[in-house]
Image 1 (cartoon, rainbow, N blue to C red):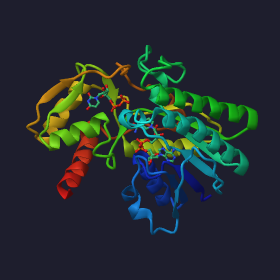
Image 2: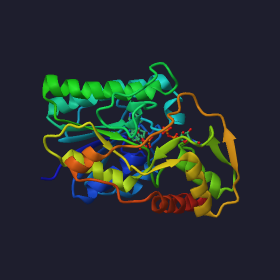
Image 3: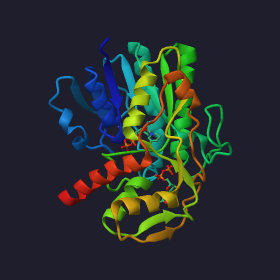
Image 4: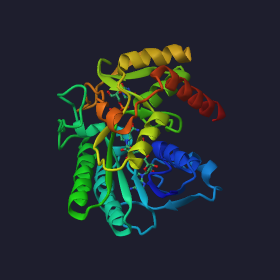
Length: 313
Ligand code: NAD
Ligand code: UDP
């Protein structure tokens, strides 16, 4: 059956790759975005396609649209962007989830929430399993995002229990790829852009904190598997379990770009999680999904992307 998919945040980094993959499956896509961190350029190549429509809208406000599948991705994801206007970030997460769940309830759509590894906060369980409840500071600089996403999960499960809304919840771990913004502020785009410009690579803290990086094509496959899966609400972790220190990442980026950049240590932001790695046993078992793109290979794609972008400027 061909679906009509509403993708909120569809002009953003992950959202635009998701729109593209759904179009390639022969499905229809309503891409909704307020262009806070998204760009028309990300979806420019889809604009003339009859399967694709673009709606400029802010999910903080209700909207009525006909769709049988909703992917709720609208929310700035980089700490720099989500901390720019924390109240708006909470509103996007909480009121946005309420509006999209209300829509799903009214039109009988299946709805998937882009949740995050940030619901685990600075985790005391490693690697992180879905049954872990997390360690989040409710009043810190990251709480507008972390707590917003936690409330959104609660809303999803309450709408499921109380109103039998057909929900899916994925907890996405650090994902990277082409279409990240030059000024995105997240570690991979920062390091690659700095290396290509031969500017200092800014490591926050001592660089011993870890992250596990998933290439966007792997993630999008996992998201679609989850949406297609029957009788499984999640939450399910989606990410690449290969774990690296930030120092290792900096060294790899310098090596792959052949950059003359030096490392510069800067203060560690408050509440920066010290370790992060997904346990993806549940995704392997229920979705038969696991990532295939290594950090080395994914970085090569991202380096080529930013290199092209920076030469065009
Ligand atoms: P992004 O900032 O590139 O995309 C977010 C998109 O949402 C943008 O197009 C932005 O303009 C749009 N948006 C923001 N607020 C909106 C609003 N109020 N109304 C309508 N549109 C709005 O970020 P991304 O990395 O593509 O992340 C997409 C989703 O995935 C987010 O919900 C994020 O929390 C989640 N996620 C991403 C990662 C990651 O590593 N990239 C990890 C965990 C979760
Ligand atoms: N980081 C860094 N230099 C940068 C940007 C980020 O050392 O220029 C660190 C950051 O402190 C964190 C890790 O890299 O420990 C991942 O940061 P990012 O903002 O990409 O994602 P998140 O912290 O949300 O996982």
